[in-house]
Picture 1 (cartoon, rainbow, N blue to C red):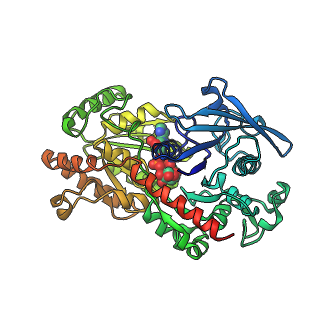
Picture 2: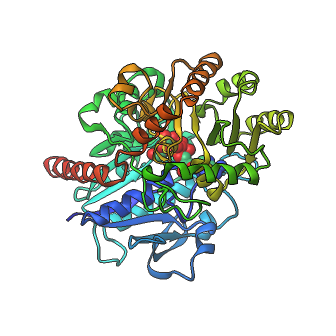
Picture 3: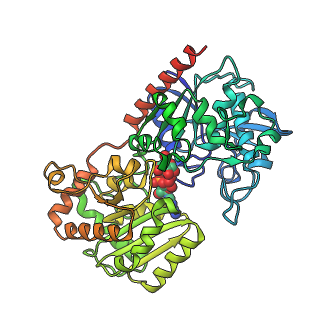
Length: 486
Ligand code: ADP
Ligand code: GLC
């Protein structure tokens, strides 16, 4: 058994903006079920504190003139011990963990996540009376990437693992910010957290972590190339011996059509015909024409370029001329929200667009959909295609990142060997998207074939169990690297 301190800026069900939260919730629980002593550390955002009944203070620390209380709770629905860093000036505010009401990054994000990192280091070094020292500190994305860098300045320290969920988000700030935050000067420089004269949080993880991983094997290879390496491909190639890809799993207590509490009708592989009841209920709920034979296409997404908004919007006129219905739930950049709403006003019986974040609707849509649309330009892993596969909604996806590792295109060979589970969009263009949709609709017309594809999709075990085992091995490797470097 190892002691793991898992650092993350979001975790379901306490706070979620995307897949990162699902991973933090699902993986920590799976690690615990596999005998690891895991503690989760999160900022105590207002949204979290509002959900909890007075969590108990167990320790305190001080940084940047702030008194930081460490509160203890359990991740709801689990036994995962969760510590919350309570510092009102940094985290007690309304809204999104990273963005202000206008959708811009909070102006003090560098301070907020440097404070998070400093307090995490105190816990990692057992300097704040918790009487618990981790063997491994597992950091995720730029918000906790400073931790491996700070820990590297200590001779005796736990091992560190850094997971890249999305290299496009890097936490870049001015050089002055680095010095204003009083960070150790030896961390500055191109072999440290400097990136072309800027202060770059994510480099803390990329340069200093004992082990680095990403959330799918294909993305681990893609970031070694210039297109998706964002200027870090050289550094990552240099550290490639330390880099691996571990595919995300799904939390089958939460995303399971047989037991999902949000659904109008539960179903499984042996009662697939019941899935239609979810479709009828959703069509009624969203005021779409009720028709079990019209293919329903779902999409649940952050509305940002990464998710293929450009090709989707370009494809809209032709998509909406096809015999289908599209239901989209999402939020993000205003230009995409407005464009989608405009299309839905022009095609009210064919396209339903819900702007905002709606957990229940997202479950209902996975259960109702026949086809799931994921035309991402890049996708480190992607969870919605995994949920869709589990719910028998066949993904229409680009062959990138985790989508390439999980969606198997329907062709003669894969139909015969019963591995086909979706439809690959050959290029990042509107016309390729439309062509693939037409191909999917042709398959949909053959109910026997379609049902076989659904069964192929639903059969594999996609739970966290296998991935948790991979992480446990990665922790061992990180501990070995750390002890050999001394
Ligand atoms: P990413 O993390 O890049 O946004 P993922 O596919 O890994 O993409 O995970 C997205 C997660 O966020 C899924 O659980 C998805 O259901 C959820 N999600 C995204 N947008 C919404 C929304 N508007 N309402 C509800 N859930 C959403
Ligand atoms: C990021 C990626 C997404 C991945 C998620 C969880 O948000 O964009 O592909 O599934 O992290 O790892």
